[in-house]
Image (cartoon, protein in one colour):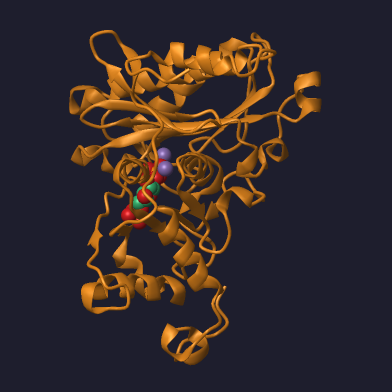
Length: 360
Ligand code: AHG
Ligand code: MN
Ligand code: MN
């Protein structure tokens, strides 16, 4: 059935479920609960300095070693409150919690795992730039779903290819929910009159080519040679090897960059670099790279570590960081090619430079 505009999220999910006559409806119910959390966070964000949720949590840093905003904590609570009661979850994991969250004994436990970054880009809250929530739904291992035992870190360490659904909400001039249940990507806009998400962007596709790239250039001295080469070639514009001019964008809110790229193409890079050898990348595999990667691939784009598809990476730990490159397919493939090409004298490879060959 063609996807009609102005369908509600509930209608969309019911129609998706018809593809799987045996489906119990639990996944749909879980996604609807997540959407309620997102509506709550959208309201909390909208009050800004008027609410006592503005500012940092007194001296607190999260397990990532980052300053926690009050809204990070509030958003985390909203995800938990909207979903823990339902009986669909075996457990949760979040950027803002040190370890897995156990479903309290007052509630029954189910077969899904919910993994989320409750507020991405929260360092932008004070300057009123778009932020968002990112989520990923995995199946709990069968034995966990059958025994209802507490979840362990190991239960969450699944490659992104196993995601059942993923999405994000973007709290910008309008609130949007962008979702994939493995059948393409659909964008919903929150109708403020009804409080309902309605289909406004059916079948989102990322253009395969682009002339726009996003990277935090202040890290350029730490980039590896293939990234340096790619950016240099883009900056050389019409007179360089690419033969065309490029634009740059950097919002410092990954979810907002992902949305721009879904709407009009582009490439986003937060690659592995040499800035901090303890951190193989800035963004987190489970909460950021995998769900956004799933959305990109479902929309005909590509998501990569720079070397391999990010969705194929088996996580080693819950809060694992990773290099991430995503967006228009031809550009991401080009960046992967640069990583795999043998070093040449003009590629800027450290093999031929003054800097050490023995990088991480
Ligand atoms: P979070 O707010 O969840 O910690 O994530 C912020 C991330 C991401 O949204 C953004 O792309 C990146 O951090 C910004 O990094 P820089 O501060 O290096 O620009
Ligand atoms: Mn984030
Ligand atoms: Mn966050």
